[in-house]
Length: 267
Image 1 (cartoon, rainbow, N blue to C red):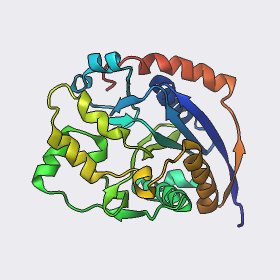
Image 2 (cartoon, rainbow, N blue to C red):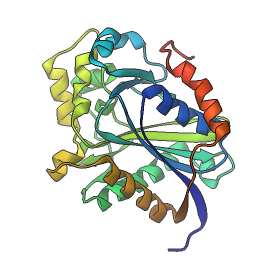
Image 3 (cartoon, helix red, strand yellow):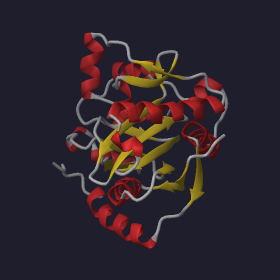
Image 4 (cartoon, rainbow, N blue to C red):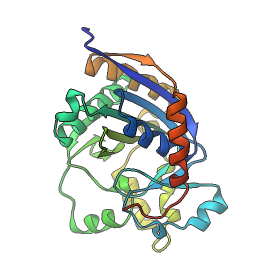
């Protein structure tokens, strides 16, 4: 493989929602290097979209159950982050990828994720979404991010495995996404403040799939993280330089964490 450039690789492991979202935004604000970051959530956390109304989620139940609640810097609907591998990609403003359309960047990053999942033995593909019926369209507007569809989605037999979102900052483009390893994402329906019913949970179950269901075995976060790193190197013809967060980045992240502990809308 002919290597064309060096990217930065970060595995920040398990952390709470405010830290995870502050890192994604902080690295995008700095916009110094192309980055692939992988991480997970401790405790399990519900993230809501940038413009989503926080009152849709029963925050009191989240506190009682020890489930985190945080707002993402990207759009979309609510996600329950359980046993998963989360990826984020930072493309700096001066990078050739930044000049491409958002859809082209989305599809290229998604293609690298697909390659990583295939390396893990998963027969998945990037598919153009089917037009949902009227009943499901109403459902996906109200509920889970994994129930909704972008123009192209990473799927297994037309069931969604990865949910991704994207945002352009002044200094960089951020795309991040949840790769479902286990089935904990189905617990989301227990935390909506108004409508909690079996049909909504069943809709989510029918439209999604997780890695452990496909492979019929337990799968560790580390396995998927390693496949993502190898796949991005191969797809983008790059080499990775492991580089921990700098002191300056940590200072910015700690400042941003104050916002991410507050669910007020940021318009």
